[in-house]
Image (cartoon, rainbow, N blue to C red):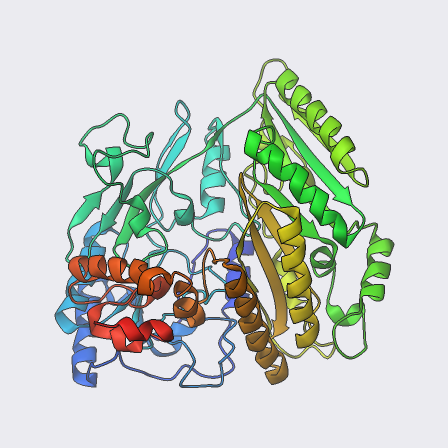
Length: 559
């Protein structure tokens, strides 16, 4: 075992530097804690057994755990509320994962599984149950296959977006991947068809057509003969994903980056209604990303550079800053892909509809095509046009984290968000924004929102940046988050994921029939993870052994 921090987590030095800066040694030292119900003697033996199974250089304790806590923890100074692991293990293969599970089962030690630990703003790699051993899969980072003919990839869970994008570019693959604003995270959350999962007892399961030895459709179909179980392993704690597939976009002949800007806050209503209808009909084929003026401002510098007064920056000043930088209140971005004439025809139809339905808006299109019959390379598209739309790796949104830092250079930047799922209705989106803006103002934060438009729903993201070392700001963040939650409950909006501190709170949105969904999933949990070792409490799913740790009203239904 080692008490030094993990090294060489990323091959790219810029990404490694960003990782090290984010997970720099915490101001408050990491105390030594034990898994619940485990004695020091048993724990020490488990560490020896982990070390024998996967090598002592892959087992971390003490100060070596600085990369396994929430770098933005609101309770960094609170030993009771702070989320902390007892150790961390980094297996490199399926066999080593099985060995780790065996040791954990033998000594009744809970594990907390993650691929890259970059679920920042949601707890990062920190466990739901204090004293869990972090099961870090970042060393399982093989790209097994990228298939041009059927446009899919098969990877291990530690593969990052940048890894996959770089592999495709280096090897001339004729596919584009999805791409987030920060490409240092794992692609695991994007799997769509066959996956390979190890259960708590070490049994290996493949889902869908991947479960048929030698099937040529292993990664092409979402359908299974019998129940489809892929979804059971996404954002859950029922198994450890060891291989996964994801569908990719065939490299197109042409691409157009499209945008719609509108000048006022209330213009979000026709924007959502019009773009939402075009998403539902398929005229707009990709997810539409809508950014607010305020969020863009927060990436241009630090708050103190724009405002030195008390409280949140007032609207009149934000409007001045927007005017200075030529920012509209809302900007929507999406892409069109395919043959040149098809792309151009789609854009012309979209232009015509938006001119009629969003008269205050400005529509633009930046067109790119492969020349002389050659398919278009995403590397030939300027980053400002291709970002998030063409499978180009990026870290462009990282400066947002430092927005709230004071002018004297102290403090530590952090961020979080509340992300409800709302129907594609301009009226409902505006109503949510108006309510959430009141919560921002009450807590002293500038509203920094963006949202993603799918075929029938909006994934709203209420972002907030704060100084982790400022006790007043962290208290206000907590109060604001709980306010967002009350607003969401009143409207029946669920969340698409949750911070480890609030997983039970969010899970209990599913309150139909005395929380029957949770009762059903926990029956499965108890069946496939008899000893309750896999990420207890993840997404509000508790094994029998730890069910007394659940927080909130669903306690009433404990068995």
